[in-house]
Length: 63
Image (cartoon, rainbow, N blue to C red; front, side, top):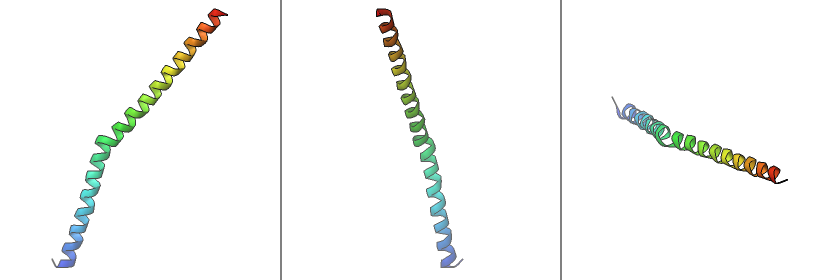
């Protein structure tokens, strides 16, 4: 194996390992962060709608 083959192999392994660790990072941090954030936003919207419906019901009872 001469130097050009060796350097090509090292470059391939470098790119492969970067992709591997990037995938591990995405699956362990980015995806759960995205899912929890979207769940919290949906829950906030649900609470706001529920509070708005409760206020609307109280206003109708007063009238």
